[in-house]
Amino acid sequence: MLVTRNIDTPLGVMRAAATEQGIVLFDFEYRRMIDNIVKRIETQLEETLQPGNHRFIDQVEEEINEYLQGARITFDVPLHMVGSEFQKNVWMGLLAIPYGETRSYKQQSVFLGDEKAVRAVAGANGENGIAIIIPCHRVIGSDGSLTGYGGGIPRKKWLLEHEAKHSGKHIQATLF
Image (cartoon, rainbow, N blue to C red; front, side, top):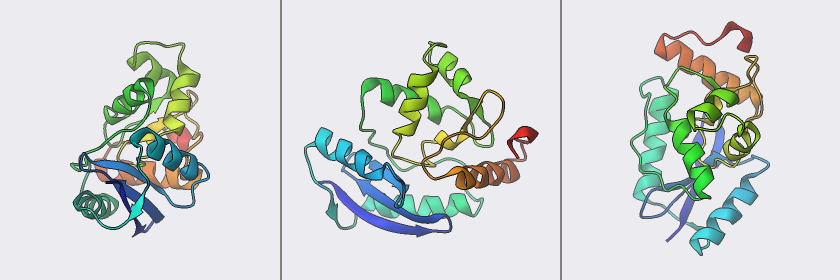
């Protein structure tokens, strides 16, 4: 069963969805691409989102609140990534970026074994429907600039500043 409900956060309303395997969606409700991401999930899982509650949604709500308060740097909620094998590989690579650090799209491509796949990697990052937990906000332009983020650049900036503050690490000065 594919269950969904909204979660209010200080960053705005987020839509969460879960299966018995884990969280399949945790993204900003207003995000322009959210309907496409939901359609991809429903198509691949051959199920339709149903309003309701789920233990993994309760868990993600608790963990995101701890994260936003600076009390959590990693997430324990199980994830159920729904996408192509390439997308899932890219998203697993995002999980390897430590809290409080950033990588460029090129660095992410090199990490994944194909430095020429920068655009494909950026595209897969954009299809990530599990925001913050799969930390696509930690990927920046090669020049240190903040580039596309489904939650919007102001939220990306906030997330990076939040992680820098709570990790004691310094994000590149050119970011801000």
